[in-house]
Length: 90
Image (tube, rainbow, N blue to C red; front, top):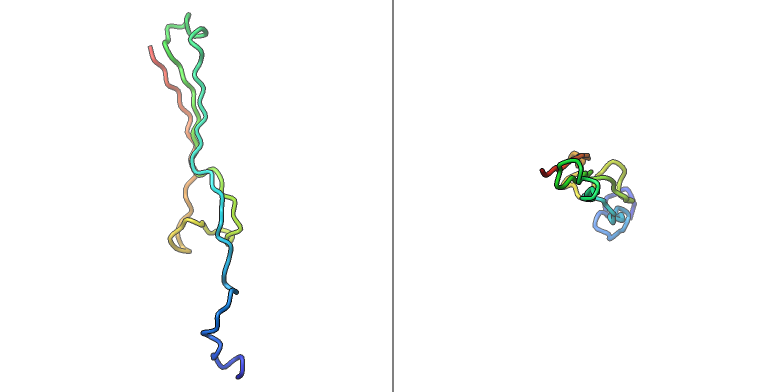
């Protein structure tokens, strides 16, 4: 058999197999509620400050530029978002 004749198309091979394992930080929220002792003279009952992020990072040996959770090779990557907030109760 000649390697160029196409007769090897059905042989088993691991040539195209890749490690698709990954670690992703999908959601992260950090918050702090200011103690009521500090707020006693301000007129506020409760004040909470928080920071939230989505899709912070992905660690992967996957094909560079491709998302391991994407449904196809041409899918857009997940958007990374950051939010800052302040909850105040009177």
